[in-house]
Image (cartoon, rainbow, N blue to C red):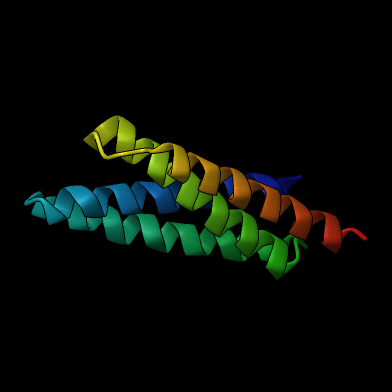
Amino acid sequence: MIGYLLLVAAIVSEVAGTLALRVAARGGVSFYAVVVVGYMLAFTLLWGTLRHGIPLGVAYGIWAAAGVALTAVMSRVLFGEPLTRTMLGGIALIAVGVLLVELGANH
């Protein structure tokens, strides 16, 4: 259970770092500090996830997929970037893929 809580925190940290990168790229230079801290924290928390016994393929799959999906949604909310039906379909396919990896790891 702790491993999955660490994984959620890693995802949130990575997404925060990525969203801060968008702000920094638009001229908010001070946000580069948030980018560095967000990514460092994300990798540290991912390391903790692995230390708590979650297999690498499962942890990385969930981390990457959730990061892509959450970043796309939050980019729409915060920056008004597009989130088309095709993109939503892609997010759904990512979710199915991660589910299959998780089920395969438990098989």
